[in-house]
Length: 258
Length: 258
Image (spheres, chains in turn brown, blue):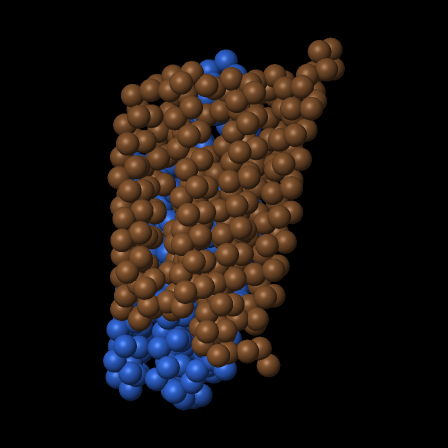
């Protein structure tokens, strides 16, 4: 559970506005991925549909986070500060979101390559199982008390094992499959892979922050803003890269929109 | 009515997050079934439309259950526990949901086979009437007091008769129709049928739990989580199997997306 600090009007509003900005971005990305589907060849449309689902799920959860943020604080008119209302701020919505979206993100990445049916099925099974395990194993540590370092470290370490396995599959096995792709597609998929690594890397930093004594007022604010930016890049931004890849592949196939 | 135990923050949050997760999953499944329709041949689209209706109805009811769960509890600041607020937790939303979705689930299963018009109409009539009776007959036992074992047992037994009839139709009569299907479709439909049996099997277990003296705090929590997982598998998971079946049938028909 998140310790709720007293926040100034500016601090409270910054998080509030960033969360609302994220809802708007995810919603707009959803519309884009739905309506831009017919701009790529039919075989790449499933990966865009999955991108659309990811940002729709994220929009829903950011709406819930927004409501939870509003309910968790109230204005204390004597001090002019926002103070805890007594209702908990349910940060676990993020976990619930990842449980659905993280496996889907690896699915989009594999689908856009249009590999052979066998290789695709194998790759998707490996990556989704590992991604689901990674999220589930992180949860008990995340909901543990901020001062219970051993519990946090234990689950965090367990959750790192599937994460390393995902990196292995993406770099080693997917890397091999990339050799058969057109040069432009290779570059785009490498970028998409790096974007995943960079944005997913923010989550363990927040997870480990309490180890360094960081769990106070400003840090919580930074985490909320950081999570939002990370989610926008890893979901809407990543989906956009997948869309550009699908366009490049459609072009390489000689397909054009009639 | 459900006896409301005192719940720790962790217990309360687990049910709360699982219910929210279910809303997100059903919503995402709805979007998928709507937008993936044009990936299968026109004659199989009706079964996907029915899948979409099922998960949309479920998303609505889970939203209601979410609100009811929130209203039924309040944080007791002295003990730090969630205690009954005095408002009842309306578990009957689940029944209302099943009354609509259970008949529709058997409809999707029959529709995707694209049987002759006569056989299809007969099969749908038998299965929907039996499914509706099964739900209606279970209701009086479900809302009976937890200690009124005779009433519960009486309605439970009555409700089992149409359930056994459904199993007979699915295994005996549908089994015969399956012989004319391509091998891959036969496997998929058999899996879908087993998924229905396995997930529907969870409901009678919860129904009969009071017979064994199980109606306390933790058990209620287990039931809510169990119901949610069962519903996700039997609605979104089942619909996904129906979609894969529709893809296999479209391919067997020589249809491809233009």
